[in-house]
Image 1 (tube, rainbow, N blue to C red):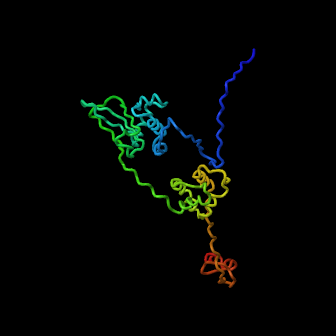
Image 2: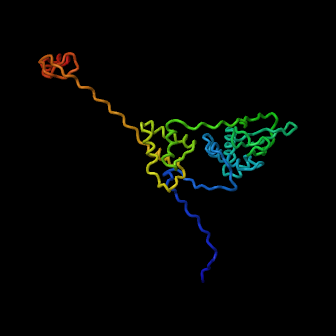
Length: 295
């Protein structure tokens, strides 16, 4: 029996990602993609929050990606996520404590209240427009109406004015990093990059290494001029971490000084002694235990 043949075009598989020559030798390497639809902007203050658990961060990103009016109750999230209701409720409580989620009591009339959930993209930030709805508000009911006597939980409310722009980083380490672009135009760093890398440079300078030597270490043996350095901050961070020399060993303690040469009280021969009554070995032996004790 003849094998069946198909003329259908086989879709081409994407070419494997090639790691750039200037990529760090350890750690994650990102394959970037510019999203044009179905994406959510999430601040690093949430994605890299130092106190929130990984589940709380993930639940927060999920809530921020949903439109106004979406159901983000514990039961609904438990249906969408593999975690159970207890874990999700704990994650929501973390987000409330961090100020991202607010449980707000709204009067329904007749002595009845309902709990509405409000999501803040960035706690403490001024809303984009006071007239427009706050972005990321999940205006849904969480559970049944509660009684009038239930206390309202505390929550962080927006309204803190934005802080003024931070001053450019300063100091010897910051100046050294800022001057690297004069040695190679591919090593242009932002103020944020300089602020992040400055402590590593301070570590080199604390070892007594001259700034010129640090600059030579960071700018020597770079990729060829026609090869771009896509992430100069990562490139420099890798060199600062992997090529840091060890501290100089501590100096060995100096040996105790030799006793001075003095004349033996018994025979006038030269002997070394710190004592007030110096004696040579023969004189100490001749005097017996008393002489040895005096010596």
